[in-house]
Image (cartoon, rainbow, N blue to C red; front, side):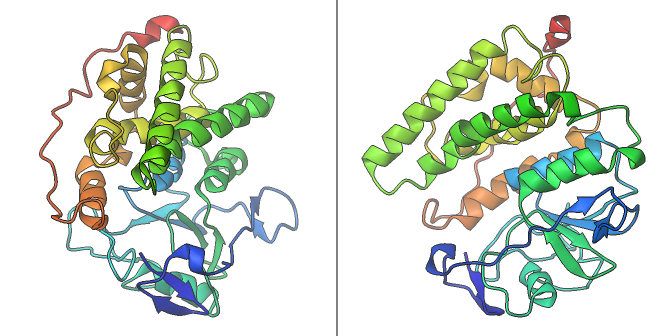
Length: 314
């Protein structure tokens, strides 16, 4: 899907061809920080289609940081120019900060010799015109840990007393479920695919059992662990079941996981971060090697607002 190499866009290159640079600075609520916590200074570039970007969007919305951290949304379909800004399309925006047409221009302006992939989400500093970070987990953690003074909701997604448990759950969920669907979808052999699918569904069955006795991943409080699990489950039946051939069972066939996913979806603020049209357009129209026709499935027909009764577990 293309990478930047020494600042030059290579549309046919893949990230494994080059050692790549990273943007891994931190926003900190401490005196003298290079990137201090400030309202109106930082900006997110996201895709509504991408599950990794969904983490950042969920964290921002659940904490009520809409007036604190601004956001732009790229086109869900990614081809030879990578992520693009197409404000004429529903649910997309222009690059409101720099006025660029393509996301790789943001990376190149921030680091003219940058080599590496151009990914979402991006946490951007509008004062220095620099990219602070490009890794979704760390962006979500920064928003949850450092912006508490600006939050307009009473949620604590990453409380200090629970961070070890949250991080352990995140690591397990990422390895087995978040990344698991991609190991299946992009497997290089039948054996690799079958192994990935088996491990994925073993993990889903395990979490289905765990969530029979607790409302959220680490107990009775919604945390970043739920923010990391939900995006994969939200996309499961519409994309991963068919497009990535993770078809042993649908999400709706897991009693607890399906109820849990609806519970999260119905949490105030979550639905505003979801766009199933963008999700399906991205996967079915961007992955030409998996779906060469580019046809986008009409279904599935899902009632996300059906009662879940999981509040009885609290």
